[in-house]
Image 1: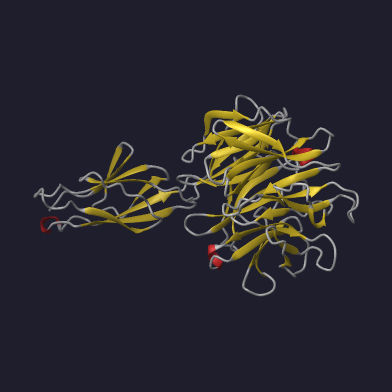
Image 2 (image 1 turned 180 degrees about the vertical axis):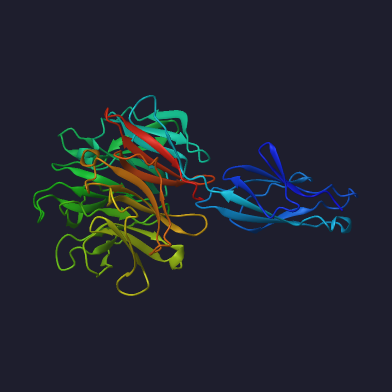
Amino acid sequence: MGILSFIKFLSCCLFLGQIPGQEVTEGTIVELHNPAPPSNENDPPPIWVQLEGPYVDLDMRSPFGAVFAAPYVAEDTRLVFRLTGLNDDQSGVPRDVAINVIDTGPVVRKLNIDGRSALDPELHPQSAEIVLQSAGHLYEISYSPESGELGSQISELESIARVASLTDARNGPEYGVNTNGSAIYFNATSDNGTLQFFEARRFGGAYEVRQLSSGEFDRINQLPSQNPTALTTHLAYATRETDSPFGGGWISYADTTAPNADIRVTPVRPGYAGFRWIRGTSKFLTTLASGPDAGQVLLVDAETGDQRVITDDDGVKFDPYGWYAPEFGGNLALHATTDLSNLRIYRDSGAEFFEPVAELDPPVREGPRYVQSAEPFVASDGRSFISLTLKDNPGSVFSDVTNSQIWLYGIEDGPQRFTLRCDNGAANVVRHEAEVVSGTDQILVYYNVLQPSGLIDLMLCASGLPP
């Protein structure tokens, strides 16, 4: 009989001949050892294959076994491996090994930048970089897809005017993408004192910065399209004009090649109904503020100018966001907040209006319940999730809030829904702007925390959710 196969992790060896399974924590380096090597050097060595659990990358370059990193998991998860290709004289060797990967929960740490505030991080959709603002300046910083830690290379866009505060601009710097690559779009004060849009595009190690829009009224809350197949980038935004029905301005959009050609869509509703681009397209969603379809979601194609109302159910929808959901055959889905605290999920079933399929209540009985900054993402296992902030006040800036939490939601309705709080759990902390990226091993969540001193920390939550 051959030597019992065994698994070794860290500095310990666990023999699995008569043991049905062993436990390791997520991220642990695990070795699956073969029995004695083949007696005939011309015979191929036995090979480990995976039978159950989320896929792991088995490194079998050594003839004596295989090595893998235990995956990051959202709950305790069982992996099963089988040793194949044994010789006849090794027939008594146990062939199957079970490994139970223990979920250790999210890991939260602070990523301060030399004691400076790091406000409203935005993640590059194509490379491992973050753009953020601090003390009125913009910074672009690399990060590690494996650990989420920030790199040492910090590029400051020193040639620009001071960027507008979030209280005035309603949004920080954002990445836009077209066939020519990416650029950063932000609000700054123009020569006549109005807030206008600027573009920063990097060429080599330098940034070329130019003012895009101009005029006698403010243009704020810019969101650029991220469509790598489009020839130009479009901006959706709000204007501050007094001729709208509510006196607050208009939700509009424009091509960045003609940034002053405001195409009005709907008046700005008091409280902001919001607008979001559908990633990979030149289409965005917003909520109509007036007319017979007030409160319903509008789909706007910025390239063709087409507009279509796509919901007809009860309730005013805020902050609609669309994505292509594997759960619905890859068709377009959207979520929107209702009553400022619930998330309603819709899918495109081919009918005139999208079909409501779920109503997601906040998972907390007491405390913050207002949903803000909800964004969908799809993990590698084909499941859709939503990142968001729960707040004790529906306001969108730091000064509106005294207590808030960072969460990840699944989109299933009912008690089986996945929910994960992705912060350190401390009460009465002002948290803001959850931003998600798929790291090498797990979903990484960046967000801000406002300290009593006024310093704004950049926080990282390593969620443990597979990327």
